[in-house]
Each structure stands twice: as structure tokens, then as C-alpha cells.
Image 1 (cartoon, each protein chain N blue to C red):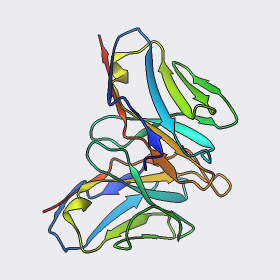
Image 2 (image 1 turned 120 degrees about the vertical axis):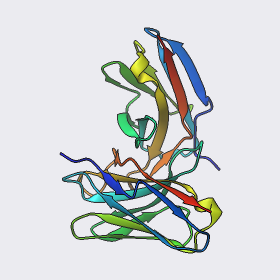
Image 3 (image 1 turned 45 degrees about the vertical axis):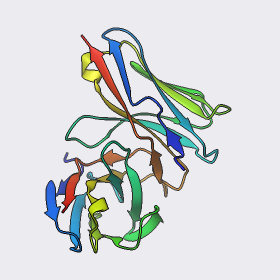
Length: 115
Length: 111
């Protein structure tokens, strides 16, 4: 049973460029959340997708957008990259549990470096 | 304003002894709390959780205690093993499904 997978593993971009990160949730999970983890800090919630719609959003600018597909996989898009966007981006999935789930299963993350 | 705080960046204990990791929160609306463990080059792994209606939850060597009046929770690991060495994150949330994380405590268990 595959867990949460993310691609790519590492990515280097230049300021001003755009990036797309991808996530496949654990089998049987239908909710996907994205987090940004800067060095030495805990994961910061970006947004959560359920039934192909953004259900919750953290304190991130509109440059951060996402999408969920019918197969529950998800993409995170970041436009107009800034140096401060350099971080580990984590995807987490949750099992169906009524409308909300507490426990999350994390992927290994995508390390984004903006130069 | 950081709503979940782990004030000890690191903790070192001897194998076989108890490890106690602490976490404080400010938002009284949080109704569930979780602990995650993270090894290098891996994503966080769920360890144990507790609902705000309880004050203790136990799972094998791991016990989480919640003190709502003090807005404080702790994770006890007994006995500690070298394989427990990792970064431990405390997280909290509401039934809306968004989790707020602390900055982590690096636990080192010495053989």
C-alpha cells in the first residue's frame, strides 16, 4: 500500500518563475493538505482540498494556489517566486472521517530552492 | 503570534530513562492535539493524539497528557530507546481540519 508520494524531490528555480508541485494521497484518502516548512520551523498550513475544492486556507498570499483532481491527487502552484519561498513543501492526506479528519499522513516533501 | 509553542529546541536523555517533551498553546478553541515524529529526509509521522475532552491517552511506550487549564500538553516516552531519536512536533487543531504546528524538539537518546 503506497503512502503519500510527492514529486519532484528537489527543485531549483529563479526568482519570478512559477513552480508546480505534485502529490498523490495515500490509498483511500480523499483530503489533501499542503504545508510549508522553513528551516528550523514547524510546518505552516497553506491550504486543504476536499472534493476538488479549497476547504481551508492559511495565511499565504494568492501567489499560492492549488488544485485537486477527481482521483484525489493534488497540485500546489506558486507564482512569482521569491527567495523567501525556499522551503520544504509537505503534502499530507487524511482518510474519510465524516467531513473532517485529525490525523494526517505526510509525504517526504519537495525541497524548493529559489535563487 | 505563534499559537503552538515548543520551548525546548532540544532534549538529550539516556537510553531506558523517561523522555518528556512539552508543548504550550494559546488558542482555547483547539479541540484536538497530536504529536508527530520526523526523521531526516522523511515527512512527519503521526505518533499519538488526544481529544480536548480527555486528559491522558496512552499507546505503548507513549503517553500524552493534556492540562487544559494551563493550556499545556506533554509527551512521555518510557523507556526511551535510541531509535526514538528524531524531531518531535506538537500540533493542534479545531474540527475544521487545519493543524497548527510547533517548531519541534530534537530528541537525542544516548545508548
